[in-house]
Length: 490
Image 1 (cartoon, rainbow, N blue to C red):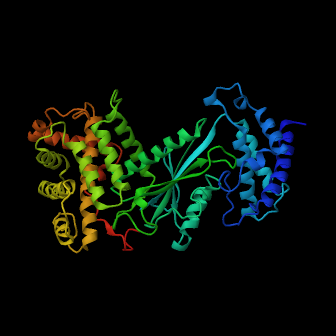
Image 2: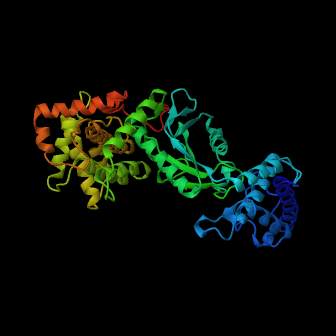
Image 3: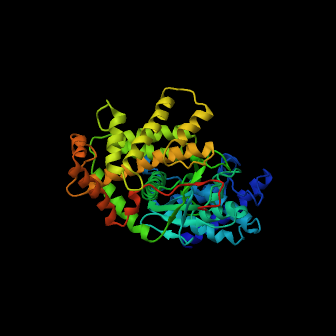
């Protein structure tokens, strides 16, 4: 009898015995709408571990690979119990979802057995992260492959949205529906897409963190290029096999602080097309060149600027977003000196970011208003609705007819765009050859920007870097965002 046949017979015998125990404990059959069991939560593992069939299957698995041996170092050793419980739970879910007989003779047995054998023998496992993102889609409505992620637009009508999202993720991570339990994790601010990152690793838990950071970096680049309001709603992490050690896990993001409530009252949808692949790769390479290898640095000023810019998309309240963006703006442009920070921000931003569509006086004025709001927030000052709306509506990019709530979000969006372009300018000025303004330097910057010819050179240089990968449109302020209740820009 070959090894696979032996495992098959032992697995079949174990299922027969285990299903009998679980029936007596009223664990199975499960409801078809919630067929996902978890040892320690839905049934007691000791009820099965004492079965002779469990012990026999465990011993057979342990003989298949040296990583199950007692002689294997602790941090490298694997344990058969986890795979047996995963096999059992996968079989129960498959039988329930497919309406099959509750018996090892069900058609699902062969699929689950093949996954068990593969999991036992594999040196590494494929792990995936699937994140639902609002205000993000593709120009064609079809999936789009980037260098290290895949974008799958969700195009179903509203009443089918949740099912489509679940099915899309479950095609990558089987039984991903089990991650949120009996609650729905999604929000509603269309259009939505699922952003998928996947890789093989012998350490799936560490790999999932790396993949999540990969998606976050992809969104950073997309936000820098397109100034979109795309928010991360939730993410499912897990292995892509039926039988696995790392079961599907749900991660919530603060931007989804309400099942039907958008974190922002305005929307600027990002629509990606195949030309964006070159733009994303180009900006990613520019960031890598600009950052270099920051040896000995726990966190650089530029790293803080990126982090706070990204955090502003995860914050739910406008005042938290504004504080994050103010910190990001200072980290990107203010330099090491802590005196006259506001004046330095105004002059540097006006010199580097001004365009025909966004002149110097508008930037100068708006930074002053935004930093007045920031100072009041930092010092715990009270805000009246009328006073806040008045300040917000005095910003040059806020539409005159905006309701008070939307006006505040337009004001936050203005600061976010200034931070976005400041980050792009710093990246490009550090990535050009030779570098004009390294990320870790600040000496002499104001003198350079005070000289008209040098200032013009710096402005033309950072724009030229973006033009190399067809991203010149990112230089200017973006189109005015639509109201979140409007059908515009859906």
